[in-house]
Image (tube, rainbow, N blue to C red; front, side, top):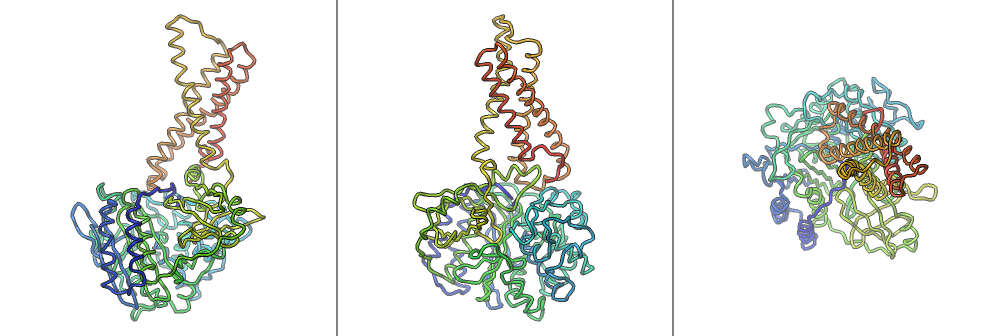
Length: 635
């Protein structure tokens, strides 16, 4: 996620320092002393170098806390250091694992069935589609097939904060994939799971989580309530885009169950231990062992060789280790939780800033990979390249977009979120890996299975009817191959040319009028022809304003989804009205170009009219193809 343009990073220093440390100390003993020395070696410097405020790191092993340490500040203005026992960090989408745990509690008590139509649990209906009902298993594995909703999902103003029931009933996403077919990360889907917990348990969702998970585990400095309760709010981190900038306003989430938990690092240690110990922490048992094992097992994957989904957790096996986890992102806060199931080891990190060039994504990944490389190493695979590499690389070449798809008025931004896979002459492929955009090269090691050259990362391609339909590198990291007309490589040059043509026509209009007056020259056309030409240029002005309005939305609002709510509707409708004036102008421009070729106008005038008409007609196609002009204001 809709969380959707590629973030190009320049954090080579971080990667080099982290990677060298992992390489120098592979197979180190996992002790508190070694772990602290290793983290102290580069994490404080990485925070400073990348303009980041603070972080918390917690590692558990064998049912005990091995390390819980804060770095940097949770409040820069107050110079207050991060304290793993005091500082509350939003965990963002890691909250989904709490929701999944609640679902599994009700499954083991016989109140819920993972494979039953969820409409039987709801007091409203999810409309039918594809002839297959949505189940709780689909919700917990992100395979319900929903598109990505943004409108009203993350309000900053409490007046847009709705009850879970009201939000889910008011906002209904489109169903774009058959259930159980294509992973498409969905906050709405997890919100439905939370609402089902609420309805079947008879308790408000937040109260259920507090009573059945947080209290039994002794997580007294954790809250799922929004806003954070008064007795905890003072210790909640301030979130920053960069440490040198201002603190950001707090977002709420209307899809409770998909986010909303804020916890200390010490409390997250208890949560990790409970899951590592098959649902038990001390005397508390939040899941039966067989339920926990079911929850942690691979539950779905559309391809064989890539990590799939467990029930609420990502399968994240690495270096031969069986690992489940989840990450979380909200404005200025980025978390990661990993459970090494067979080693009885858990890792939790959370940051309260994006960092320069959103360096947090590389830093977060570096800590996980270097941690496993250091303490549970495995050699870099050296498989031979498959003989089909050149042929399959050519098949794979093209543009791919995420299965987590924005729809409606925001669908145009999928174009900017696309990635271009390049086939190289030697049979390798090169691709900018989401979400960072770092370019990596892969060679084929089996039919449509690709290994990073000199690395450990895997890609797998899904084949249907003899063609590649999708690219997989993560449990929900699905990239769909799209036709060329949906790509930025096709549309952006045409968009630039069309805008330049319209701008030239608009600018030349008053200039030529001034020149005629200055030199007392008569107008070259008159009457109806002159009126058509003027109206065409009025349409060009409207179309340019329409484009500028969307550019403003893209550059100022897209990274702040809390601004997408009903308050924006009048402005969007006004923008669409301006666009419709442009649509009418395009029709007039086409008429004018047709008339020009049947008149004694000069050849340059005829060509100019044709170029303007073609540019405006293409803009009309673009506006409707990418739903910039629609009846519905849902997105």
